[in-house]
Image 1 (cartoon, one colour):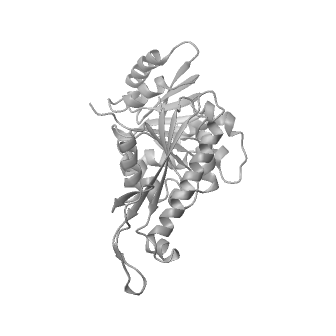
Image 2: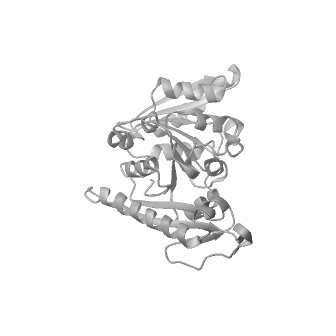
Length: 314
């Protein structure tokens, strides 16, 4: 399913740990380890003595070291993973201290220059270029990954990205917690909660849920606004349930009423689900994923992983 994944890293201990444990997720065969260096940031350049080469060389070195370490941890696995480091550098001509004019750096083999744009743009561009099936972002870190869903980069990837996005925001990954991640990550697809607004756009999430490896239980959920909607919702959800059921997998239907975000999060907690899944487009509350609203609130408030499924074209 998600054989090739992209993981942005900021070199923090936390993001490195997240990348390491992602190797345990079922079905993963290749990891694109991405660092986006915003060399257009005057403060960053000033710290390096207004030298592009200095900050780029340091980032390239740290990225390759992290990739080597990650690859070494998967070497003895039954099927070792391929780890591909990529350094994207955002550059723009600017004036430095005392009126020093900084021209774009000379081309380098260890870095890919991006002229203008944002860190979020660079992440999505890399996802397209590498044809990855999933972007994975952590809940904590420093720099661009700090405050997932509250910082500008993660918000941009969530709202405007076009690649499926897995946000690992589980209590086992919270700062200061030491957890058995070797056990958590292989079970991330074991008990999943899939929300649907019954629209055609939301079907992508349902289809994906049925194709995940290692799923033992699926909770199908829909939020209604009035009692009159119950019958139609029950009929459609039960048809979906029949399509998803198979030996060794239990599928249950849940029709909720109230504030969508509150109801979904309460259901997830009650059943201790390992993953929440919803589409990024549809009608009602799901339609507004890229704009924020309720689905953004679900992702922001969830204490467990969230998988955002993008609507497929064609």
